[in-house]
Image (cartoon, rainbow, N blue to C red; front, side, top):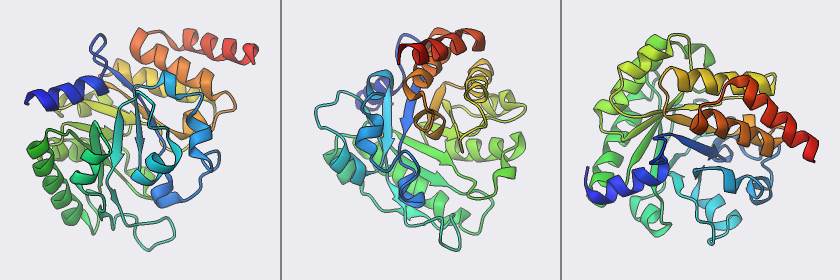
Length: 264
């Protein structure tokens, strides 16, 4: 890994902890105006200071985020699908590496759909993106998407996805937490960050998810709905940050969350 690649990775994962809290707001590229993300700029304004990076599309970056922010950007470069279409897996690269450089991205993100009818296309797109990333020193984050088939989120399937992504050259992988997650971590030679997925029943469930994932070897979280759809979004991201960077227990994280509610 050359200097530029290392420098960008160091911005994404805090050097003092080796971990990361990323805020995902790229959902609109296939879900449209998700609840509480209708106005992305307004949603993230109170949260930006507590995140280590923003994951988003070029459209939201250009139109909703101030160029004055000093937060690394993970630019989603894949798309072309929608929740209304016949197959969420029918996704390809739609933002160029040149565009990512123009937008000063610290990394680019692409979804892969292993085990679907579009497996080959998405894996070839990942390989192409890695080649371009190596050329320009920009890390690639592979996202192990499962589309509408959430039941696929088990260790055997996710382990397969993560290992393939690493073998094809991704510098980091975003995946789901699952039972026996430690096995997924051990079989993947690059950092894993976990997705929050659809909003969980309670905020405590999201805190436990983050805690257990970090305990089993995840290098961070890339959460969206479980933070900004919370009625106490600032408290949630503070609590998640405590778990990831300070190693606090869930009980302590709950205290941060409740303390933030009282200050409102």
